[in-house]
Image (cartoon, rainbow, N blue to C red; front, side, top):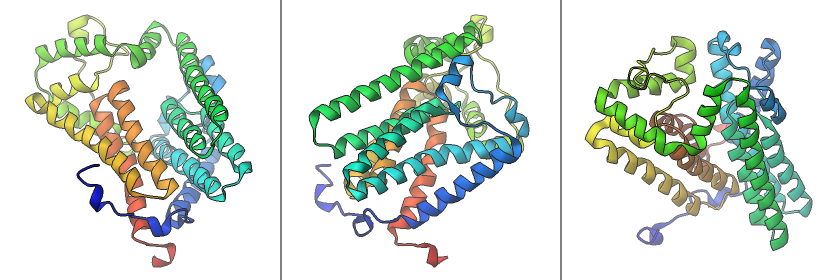
Length: 329
């Protein structure tokens, strides 16, 4: 920030708190698409949080729909943050105390109605609460909102564990690993790396397996199980970011990590460059999501998020920042 402080420009200052015609059009299209597809095929994509206690969300049967399911999954992943942040930005622009309750309501809805991708629900809901605290000057109310956010986090994690018991011990272990067992998983992954060596093609296969359009139309690559022959078990195990970077990129693994960290910093810098509340939320969401992925997920999922969700959001903001409107088409 110090080095670039003198050249910071407001990339969308003229359009701050505008109607965001392109993003609004995309959100409306996504909303109609989700409603039509879920109605025609009878897909229960969003469910009340309590359903997690009964077991994991049923996605296996829906995946038999192939391309339809994966396209719906992609659209819903893009739709939830955009729709929520667009509403919050609109309420903030109204600058009325009655809008604070509406923002709170948007945050609560994101936490209570989840899909199998629970982390997205929590991240989006958390951002709604965070931006609400930036608008409220009363310190006591801000503290109450922070406590509510902590409660939502604990509730989501707790229900995630409760739902895992019905799936068996392997699912409980997998759920626990996501939150607490990074060092153990890293040690196991490094042991596997010593045995199998560098596997760059595995990274490409895993990356393509994460793209819903590719998976839905072309199918998934079958991956070699590197853990079973070494540890005698493998179900539920995953490879953390650093160990995966070493496995897929060898001695160049620090470069990959530096690029990802630099990407997060750039997202934070972009927040400083804009006065638009919607763009601030989107850039912050991208940066925090990648940060969470560095702890909880694998390297191919981080790269996938940057090349898919984050890239699409950046394209939308780029078009609007260049003053392209619906009439331009």
